[in-house]
Figure 1 (cartoon, helix red, strand yellow):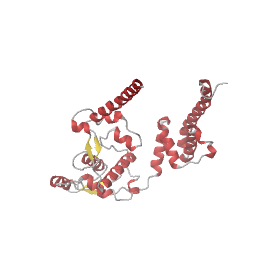
Figure 2 (tube, helix red, strand yellow):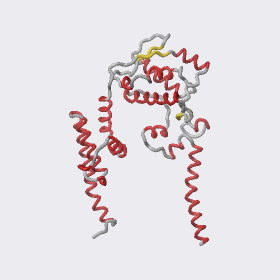
Figure 3 (cartoon, helix red, strand yellow):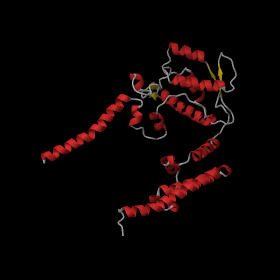
Figure 4 (tube, helix red, strand yellow):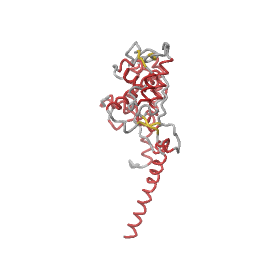
Length: 293
């Protein structure tokens, strides 16, 4: 008979696991197809239990496992590329629907004339900019207020400019606050190193300012996160030129050397040289030791 480490033993033991994985995929696809006519919670429970029993066999039998929210989220995140996009979108839209808590869109007033004058006189934190005015008007509301069923998360009145918001002013306010974030109007974001050096790719990209650490600026960063959530829930376009280095960090993925090169070519190439030199140095040291012996 073959030993546990032999190739024949390994291939024979992997066959049941492959069959189980194939059965799990088929079950998940069938469940997703029926989900439109059934309660999402029961479908989710079936899918998640199947994912756990297939992907984590070392944890013991299914009956012995205790499912926690953290455990389920970890499993889904780990194997997210194996889940069909339609299945993801079904549960995503279901979550968006059940977390909607407001029937009204808050009304805010923005004075763009005051924002321009403040920028001319000096507004180092951008508190009187369009972004700053939206921050003061919306950030301190209960978060549930922004999870509205209304097509537009808030309505806007531009003081001294007239006009009634039927959606156009709302979209304009989002575009304007994004423009404020990607300028010297606010100190929250800075051009990426490639932009400052005027070399390399993605010179239009912006990064969070590592020096923006005051309580006010950290609170403003929190509001930027809320605006991202609003854009996701409302399918709004958020005109922020953020690189993969930032987006990966937001979703819990580790940026790699390619992501660094995309925004900081100089640092990326130095790291490449160091990474390539380390194995060569180790080999040279090993050779020297052999010669000495």
